[in-house]
Image 1 (cartoon, rainbow, N blue to C red):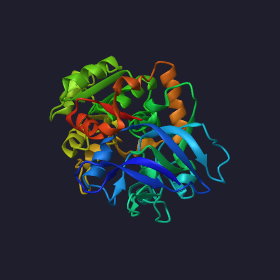
Image 2 (image 1 turned 180 degrees about the horizontal axis):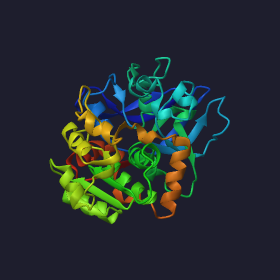
Image 3 (image 1 turned 90 degrees about the vertical axis):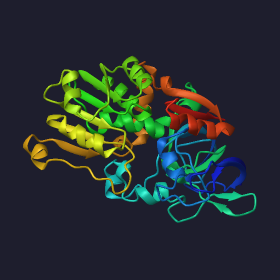
Image 4 (image 1 turned 45 degrees about the vertical axis):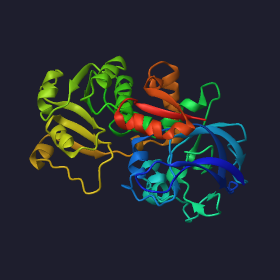
Amino acid sequence: MTTAKAAVLRTAGAAPSIETVTIDAPRADEVLVEMRGVGICHTDMVMRDGHLPVPLPVVLGHEGSGVVRAVGSDVSDLVVGDHVVLSFMSCSDCPSCDESAPAYCHAWVPLNFFGARADGSTALTDAGGAPVHSHVFGQSSFATHAVVNRRNAVKVAKDLPIELLGPLGCGIQTGAGAVLNACRVRAGASVAVIGVGAVGLSAVMASGIAGAGTIAAIDVNPARLDLAIELGATHALRSGDDFTALAAEAGCPAGFDYIIDTTGIASLVNAGILALAPRGEIALVGAYAPGTEVRADTTHIMSAGRVIRGVVEGSANPQGFIPELIEYHRAGRFPFDRLVEWFRFDEISEAFAAAESGRVVKPILRF
């Protein structure tokens, strides 16, 4: 067992408190990771506020990275001292997992949101001996240490700062993967990204990697639009209700070939659908509230072969995609470090506030 410091959320909508917890030793298929960094993601805020089925008390955090400190008896491909990026959890034996599509695992919701292992157990105990829910996204990485299943951990080289790499496990891979994996954007095509936060800016950078001819960043935040231009967008457009007009402004009178919505706002999705070119695709990547309805003219969709596509975690298999993104970063083609501002672990509330205000694109807690 390991003693750790963790940000424990006890009341929905409240700030987590830094507490001392005890972490069980890793099981046969698990590893113990000492955290070096963990990103703050919009989904953490959604879980904090009780809009997803996460039980309390719980330790959130799902963009962790760190160093392996212990391995279970069945783990043969990781050793103590390895650097790892943590990503989402999957079951490994459903039809989606069998086809290397773990982002669409049939057990995705319970494995990532129910705050427990698949058997219902938790790895954390508070100072009073009461259980605390763990394994959110298989991680619960708002802590100095985390016990994770081997499938959660992606081994990475040691020559990059490990504390920087955690967001590759969720937000960064979500935006980049929507472009490179889900939509498979064609060279020369036009792409519009609605909302250029961490996910959207990752989609902008990935569109450049894909060779898109037009990359339109759409937002209401001038600073974010300026950053999007620096990261490869060809057009910075202020969001409005008429996306067809925005497409024309970007030199795409027939509409955009691809639209990536990161906002989770149904009215913007509806406006985007109307701005799709023939055979165009819109990828729904945002955190949409349950019950949110998207409306589309079926003739508009059918008559020109348009596609409305749901995307989870960038349709990524993290074991292969995270190393791919790291190589793009090494080559200077994916400078996601431009999105980051650092906070100490005990500044977690300040980091949340900085993200919610829009002042910081991607806060990372550094241990």
